[in-house]
Amino acid sequence: MDYIDSLRIFRSVVEARSFTRAADMHGLATPVVSRAIARLEKRLGSRLFHRTTRAVSLTEAAERFYDGCCRVLDDLDALEAGATEQTREANGVLRIVAHTTATVNRLVPLISSFKRAHPKVTLDVMMTERPVDLVADGYDLGLVLPFMLNTDTTVTKLLERIPLALVTTPAYLAATSTPKHPADLASHVFVPMPPSLRKPTLTFRVDGEDVTVPLKYEIASNNPAFNREMVLEGFGIGILPQGLVQTELEQGRLVTLLDDFPMSDMQIEIRLAYTSRTLLPAKVRAFIDHATAFFGGVVHPVQKVD
Image 1 (cartoon, rainbow, N blue to C red):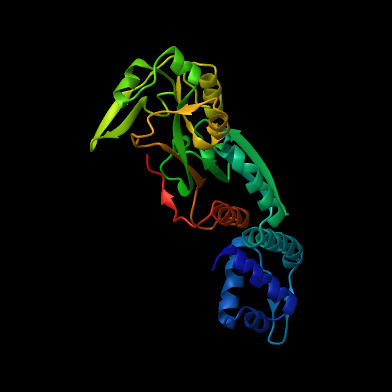
Image 2: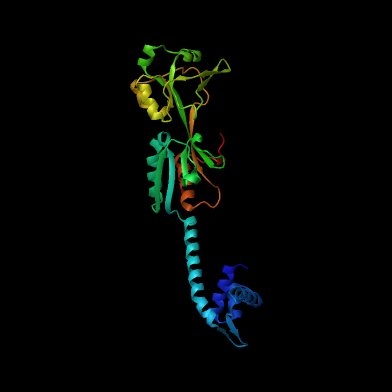
């Protein structure tokens, strides 16, 4: 029996003025209550009760100790109730980190629909494109790309795969040449992601075999929107999210390349990241469920794999 249990028994004995009634209140045998009080008296170095065959009365030490004991137990009960409420009802501040470009078209409807469903949750959203540590940076959840997670203990759920497109401007092709085969890319310049985030290569399937082409570049950036603008400025070929360039493709400002040659690793995974599968606060559990439904299907959680 721990110290808090002994305090609860002491309070019951005081209020019931009986060891037997206190034992009944706690579902214990009377000798167990007596031993608990004896241990408490030994710990405090003071007798707490005067016992007779007919009644139990408090010593002066017990009278002083009782008020403080009640305050401690009441505060503890309130603290436990608050913590329990956090696990039952979604409320409080939910801190989310999200990849700026990959989630920009999805984040506003996702967050707004979640807020309407859970009005007691306050949302603190940080947009970034750098690696993050959810625990060290103080985030409850992340809507991230795999490279952003710098620990393999993070739990993730796959939410969406975004296809990539190989694009450039008609003006760039007019000034250089239009590649007809993956090998032709060797003479072209790219605007890629930095090598620290994505290997500067493209792999094509040609006649049943993989053909890997190294990429030459003079400008690299971790921001796909910036890369798109540099491609539009004529600085080369981009490997960009399909949705990010769809308007430009429809307008003819950009064109796709080598459509007849399938490429590997031409998609971006958006993952929902959190730090634990168990004892999740209600606000975190609610967002996981909401985001999973929002992105259109349940995907089993998996450990991050590089």
